[in-house]
Image (cartoon, rainbow, N blue to C red; front, side, top):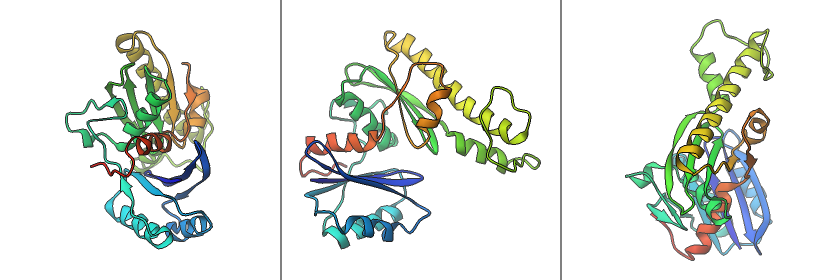
Length: 252
């Protein structure tokens, strides 16, 4: 039994893996009382044999998790740091750890599931796009603001764009709330579509498999005019693949 931790920019997701599936799972946002929420959720759980984590947040929040894990399970966390190569995936970055570990683990999950060649889009605080060749080579990717961050940036940099309500995505908007929401969500959709078209035709021999994950993946899916599917919990699934391939080993 393994406890897997995905420390993202907006929230922490966790899952207990046993017998090839999720025994238990949950999530907590960073603006909540994280330690209290996790202690309540984890205290009734059986003690895992290992705790493996992936983090794109600061050391302070990693230290908080380490303390909660020690208090509840008397375990250390084996932090996965982005390698040059692991689990059949080869990192395109010259400095491997500059690639977010969440992006690397999503590719590990895709490779292990037989989805390569494919393209991956993580739609959360940031939008991340990556291309994975059939042989596990990471071909590179893009980073842009996610749809909600894009809206926040717009509102923070303008004096008169002040929607009074959350907007609805439309082809043509006749009010500021809908115009802001529509512009930001459609901009993200358009970038994903452009990436999918260019990368599939130029680098993946026409393979068009596009996998979406992240907190806004389900909301974005119907806006896309290219074939796509949601591959939920890709970081947690990649963590499980890595943990199975590296029993008892921390990666740095």
